[in-house]
Amino acid sequence: MSLYEDMQAFAKKENIIAGAGGAESFTELKAELEGRSVPFVSFSVERRTEPLLTMPEAKSIVCIGLSYNTVYKPINDGRLRGKISSGAVGTDYHIIIKEKLERLRAELIPSHNAMIFTDTGPLSDRAVAERCALGIRGRNGSIINKDIGGMFFIGYMLTDADFTAGHKNTAYADMCGECDKCVKACPNSALDDGRCEHTKCISYITQKKGALTYDEYSAMGCSIYGCDVCQRVCPHNAVYKEGESEYACPDIEKLLDMTEKEFMNTYGRTAAGWRGRSVIKRNALAVLGNMGDERGVELASRFLTSPSEQLRSAAEYAVLKIREQ
Image (cartoon, rainbow, N blue to C red):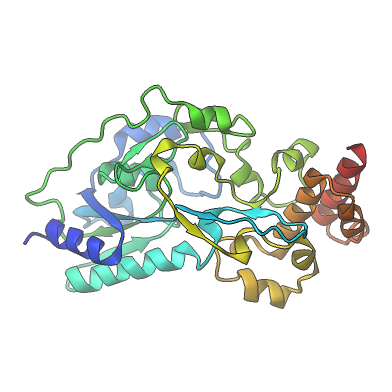
């Protein structure tokens, strides 16, 4: 068997998707990235498009995808609860993806050099996924796979082993056609035919630091962290698992009362934990305002004199918003 075939056998065993491509330049991506800011990415355009600048001896890129297409049942207990994106529920995907790539390396190419990245590498994850035939970019900007849809995490590995020998990836055809459900469904009109204006994206807004504007707080709706709206309306994500989790719809009062230790014990190993307690509490306060429930006034008022500017700002928004309704 070839390395590519070994990789596919590994993927089946690990319940992931996997592909491989060459380590040549992502020339077509340079024009798109020039003059465009990308949130939470500090690498230069050259580093983002030239794999050999990161690993000069690289011969191929291996890319894997792990589905997070789970719909969590709401908890209807009368408590004030917000929402957390499906991708941020449970163990942080960075940890899981890294472990799978490390096992792939250990089992398939133990004598070869490799560099593993999980949302932390210089290359564009989505461009890598396309080159490795995991899917094609849809109208919401995410990569859509023909088998598991568009709700999957991406990780990749640069290696001097040749995973492409004897195999040629089949190019993906357009997966969207005339469908534009994601574009129409986006609560903040952030999508435009395969591009996402990150400053309008609710997922990005919930991860920004500091005090936000009135419009940004309002755009959050009930989202404490992340947003799944454009993914949930995509027909390619129609087949999903169901789950139950307190993390998916947290009790806002409990969240606001959490100490740093309690927060880290609860969220420290989730994908939401990296942003820290203050940002998550800020978002929870904004959600109180957007829910419009009078009980939110008392909860938010506790933070009107907070030493944290972002908590004061969100509390002021919540009280004002509730009283406006």
